[in-house]
Image (cartoon, rainbow, N blue to C red; front, side, top):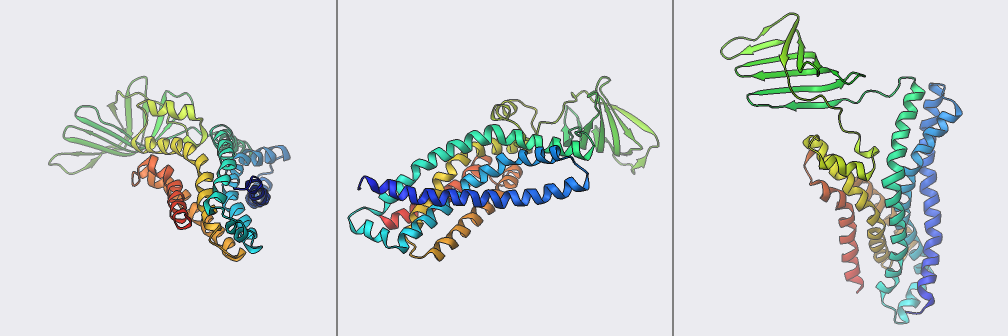
Length: 348
């Protein structure tokens, strides 16, 4: 390939990349600004508090913009070259079609490295600061983390609470939707308390069901022994570093759903940096097949729509176990790599 050709194509794509990056940043910032200003005016937030909330979201919108600008730049950049018949001239000179695509992968490696650094350091801290800033604006203080669907099953018994909300001191907790099964007796109550020092659950006005008897409701409190340890729930996996994610996964405190969520979040932080490369391969091969800017623009919309659909559907599917967590994190990349491979085969 002619020595200047990769630089020429890269220069054309880079111009479009900077335009696409600015476009996606502006679109996302406009949405966040409108929502932030509206809530700030409602709760009489200061300029500093509003600014802190807005700045906290910048790492997240930067990551999405860095990735989404890749297909935008490549498809529109190559469509410009197609429109002026420059691609036709390049191919007519004996250059293989895929030789135009390979140089585009190199800058995407640099973009991926920036995405990885940002997603593992700045994005978690920003999301955590966003939440804390709004709690300050609301004047409610940071809420005590709660644990949903708590289950403890020692020998011959089962303890369940729909929600466990620890008190500030951390030695007691409020229980909601409580069930205790011991032998042939089952107790259910709307609410209760957990006293960790005395290893006791207290159920308020529970219903008691025994084998062969009708359920009866008891007025007042019923104490049952419970020797499990009261622990705070794991932190939100989106708001912790990679090291903290690995530390939580190495322990045994996570529930099955939480473990899937943590696994997905950690895997996605390694998968997302490869998305620009997958985009570059698919968009580069597709851009060489189009002859008009209209088709390229339509392809940009399809790319972003498909990515968005996969991006919002994979986390809940991974958490529920419908899709294996690591596969769910890598699936968007696999889809675009498969698309790029098929298109590259057509251009061979």
